[in-house]
Every structure is written in structure tokens, then in C-alpha cells.
Image (cartoon, rainbow, N blue to C red):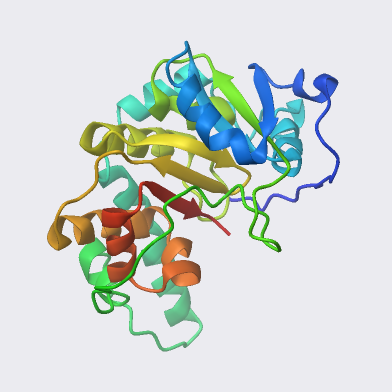
Length: 266
């Protein structure tokens, strides 16, 4: 089931009454302090995740309206259990392979020409957007999803959810994140974040509206490993390349050099 979500975005700060509609406690902080506060809260019980500014929180509150229960029928615990049965990235590639087959068939049915291969192979598909290695590329060294897109400065107010789990990779299950457009389902997100936590110690620092950032204290140490990771990240989130850094190689360099990994689904 695919669905395009329409969100009513408000400019006003969330009120305490609004935040009470969420099934977990939420802390309000100055936007410029959110990153440091998140790192501090990592030592406290639960899992902290920055859930964005007032606009993003308004969208999140809407997602917990009962009208969305049919779209998100699983409890967080059931999402985690489903994720535990998934092998990553194989489960993601199976989904992308089915999407690829549907798209190629549609192109043929409508007499359109395409350079895409008949069958899906994650490396072959990624090579179409590989590009050259950017030797002098220096990525941002701080989270970017809390910056105002017009001014480039941090938003005035940010909110941090304290989720009832000690496993940070489970955050998408508690935030009803994913399952629309090309954004993977919550269980795929949980399986992905579990894998990247095990491989790199990566944890979600921001999950807000259509964005996610991971704090990655450990990262690939050579180009080969970085490109392999970037290929998986590309199939997880093609927009981060096609509407972002431009090439798989640029994304790989970012994953080697940036302490925060940014994702965005249109």
C-alpha cells in the first residue's frame, strides 16, 4: 500500500497539551542546544531522538491520530519482532527489485525506452550514478535537518522524544516512521538501523517529518567499504543522491568523513 501524506504545518510552538497526545515524553529545547542535549540524554534511561521543530511535531502528532491506525496496524513491539525476522539489506533489495520490475514493465507497456537493465542488481543499478571520487569533498560536521532552510541557522525550538526502549535502532517503530512513497516501512528502518548500529555504532539523532540523521561514531575507513555502504544507502534512500549529493561516490565520501549521516525521502 502506497500513500502520499499531506501534512498541515503550523508555525506556532507545540503546547504541552499538544505534546500529551504523543505516547512518550517530549522535551522542549532551544534549537541550537538540541544536538548537545541529545548527547547528554544518551546516558539517561530510554532512547532520545530529536523529532524536529514545531512543524515536524505537528505532523508527528497527526500520525498518532486514530485515523492512521489502519495504515500502521502493528504496535512498536510487533514492528520490532517483524524486523528481527528480516535479513538486511536483503529484505530491502527484495522490495526494490519488485519496484524495479514493475517500473520496467510499465515502461515497456507504454512504449518508452529505458537504459535500465531487465533485472535488478543493487551494484549494477548504483553504477549508473557512481561518478568520480571527490578527493577534496568536506561534508557538514554537524546535523543539518534542524537548520532553517532559508537562513541556514538552527530553528528556534526543537523537541526531543524519550522513547521507551534501550535499543536506539528501534526508534522508527515507536515514531511510526516510514511506509509512504519510497520511504521504507518501519520494520525495514528498524532492520537497517540495527545493522548500522552493529557495524558502525550508528544511532538515530533526528527523525523528523521526512528526514532522518544518524550519529555515526565509527565509519568506513577506505573507499571500497564506503562505496559498498553508499550503495546500500542509495537503495535505502535514492533521494539523498538524486536530489542531494549527486553521485554514489560523493555519498561514499560523505559516509567516510561526516559524523552524521543524513537521509531524506521526498
